[in-house]
Structures are given as structure tokens and as C-alpha cells.
Length: 283
Image 1 (cartoon, rainbow, N blue to C red):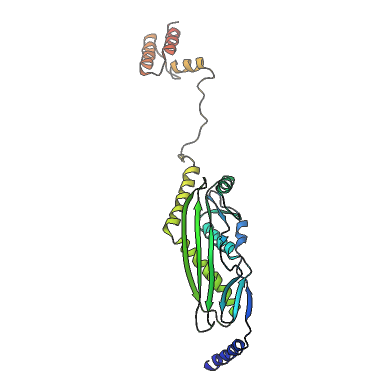
Image 2 (image 1 turned 90 degrees about the horizontal axis):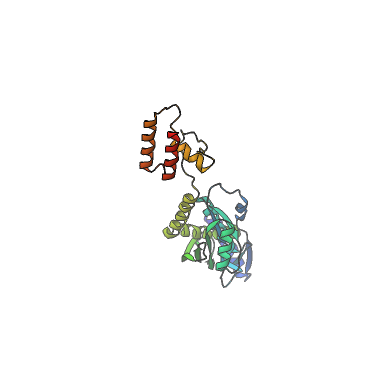
């Protein structure tokens, strides 16, 4: 084993001493396809925008010894996509936008269009990893990003900046190892955001608001729903119906008068209804 490592170190020494800098283009997993998945019925909608890219060096993402790396995917969009995947897993239907500059009117319009109450966006300020060599030392990455959430009026309801880091020994296959390191750093950003109690509380509040808004009135499972009874087609028929005895019941004139007096005193019959009912009884 020691002999094998010694040979590898000699090879690396030859590469390094040759003064040949190497550039590698790495590919990371594309998760954007999940936007095409079927929405969950009854789940609240949320909208996310690609994070703005504020990195000073948007091309290079890291350096390990003589290798310099760049990514085939724009990391600002990759970060937003991974946040979107986590939002989906927590119970949201996620819609994607790609505004270069987000305005209040844009937020209001897109939230109304998607029947949503929250709009997630932000900035990727920096993303870089480095190591003097790939085998015995872990390569350290550091990412700085800002996440913001706006409501249906376009007003900011959450905003916070994070600086996170992750490290990994990339091993002999530096190109593959660098790609995995990029994904590890992106996943660490997502874990940090969803580990923020304030951010999570905002999401939970929105989900509960959606349930209150959409939850139908509860009905007794044992009660058969009947169409609402129509007492009379006209006001006169309604008045007569109120004053009539229940089906199968027979009253004398005095009992009937006493009944309608009681209805009148209780307010179930108006003065006009009482007058008409009394006249009908005395006919």
C-alpha cells in the first residue's frame, strides 16, 4: 500500500513539476426535471426564482493543486433547484420563475397567477473550494448566499444571509471528486436554510393558512344530506304555511286561536301573518 501511494505521489510530482495547469469541467446532477412532476392535490403552491449570481468569478468554482474547475451548470440556478426539491418534499407544489431582477409587481402578479402566497428568491454571493493536494488533505468549500421570501403584496417577510462550508477528500479521481464536492456544498446550503427555525415556521404558517382557506365544512357522516326545503313559492304561501297545524293534527277553533296567539307572542308570526291566520280560523 505504501509503495502504491509512493508511486502516485511521484506521478503527481511529475505533473506538478511540469508546470502544466489543468482545467476540468465538472458535471453535477441536474434536478430541475422535478418541476414537471404532477402537483399534489390540495397542497399549497409556492414560487421560487433562480437566485441572482453575485459571484465575482462566475466561471471558476474551485482549485485543487494544479487543477482548476468550472461547472457545466450555473450554480445559482442549481441552488434554487435544490431548495425547490426540498420544498416539494415538505408538502408544497413548487413553481419556477427566472426573473433577472425581481420587482414587487412581478411578485404580486406571479403569486396571483399561481394561487400562491410566498415567493422565494435570493443571491449566491460566493462559491469556491480549494486544497493544496487531493489525496491526504480534505478539500474545503465555502458558500455564501442570501435567501429572501416575499408575500402576495410583494413585501419581504423573511431575509437572511448564510455562510456555510463543507469538506471532502476528493481522492485520486479529482474530476469526479470535485463534482461530488460541489453537490455536497449545495446540499449543505439547503440543509442550513431548512434548519433555520424562522424560515421553517414561515412555511408551516403558510401551509396552515392554506388548509384553513380550503378545508370544507365538516358534515356528519351518518346524516343524509337532503335538499333545502322550500316552504312556499310566495310570501303569502309562506305565511299560510307557518300558521297551519302540523300534518295529522286537528284543532278546535279555540285551540287554533290559542296556537296562533302563542306563535304571534313568540315572534314566529308577524302582525300581518297573525291577522290573516286569525281571519282564516274564524271563517
